[in-house]
Image 1 (cartoon, rainbow over the protein chains, first blue to last red):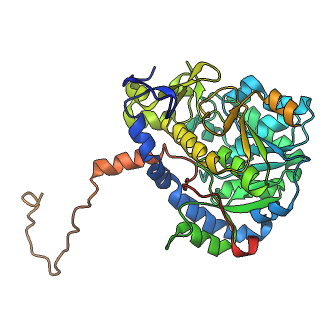
Image 2: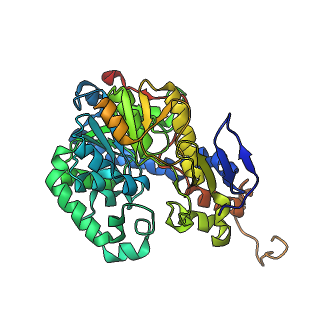
Image 3: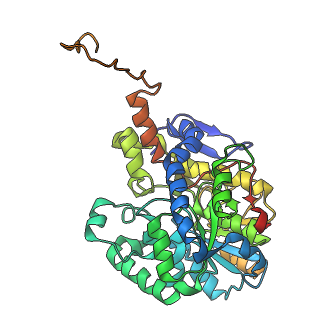
Length: 355
Length: 56
């Protein structure tokens, strides 16, 4: 359990929570930490990817491209709720005709359950990990020994057998890749871009909003001038980016979220969380609890654990939701993403009401 | 350190020693470690999409 630094009941300002000793300061630093993590990579990748500019269109083209048969969209990400809820199965069984937007991490869940996303979104500049969501034909046994990122996390169990999962995704991508457009951030790694091109996915490029593009010497503005693509405020992560595209680019009026938990079910070992290795490197295994919070979800009346990165995503999302034109429905039936302007309901209820 | 490394000759060119960085090695390590915990992409408050002139 996290080290308890006093339990706060911030019902009026935030959720009931128990914070590890370092959580609050880490959340406050997250913006700078993110820039330190991705800033240089993102800009370097965008410069490199300029050569592929004409292999795709601008994200702006999607504004004039009707997608789905209704004003609704469902985002499919890969949080822990996916394995309990199977959103792609529900979409298939309900014969959902709205727009399905999958994060890169959600591709396997969708395709394995017979759902071909109308749009895929990818943005993280990590040089080796992200390509795995697309199936990596260059994956070697040695890579698996060196990086346990996928097999130790509380993800779709299929990823526990990494070699088999990789082969399966490659086969599925071979069959369906050409019919899956992707909103691809210019900050993605060369490995992802080459894989997307190889799979034949139609590309719609966008720039990451790294800073305020209206300010002098803005990195974002320089990227926009360099390649002519719009910049999207992605809220720190690919799920939030997918939601922003549904709202601000595709103009969907009701957007449901699945697999966007921003946390883990209570009792999940810290070692099964996304940033565990990083946490251990920073504070050691014995003090890992200082970097986690327990947060009470009043809708499910259960507790979830979450790290500073996920809590920052939550704060960013709730701020973005205030300015959104769409109605947001959190259909994860769990996690920590609840608050003003976020409706909370099961996916079946959303599908029944809005299909 | 200067007390220990006195040398036994005089250099022809004056060697400029860079002033100590404001960031200590420990701080640099902490910043690097923290960066690994950061998000996948930045967040800019109160912004949605910035369209280019040809995409408006």
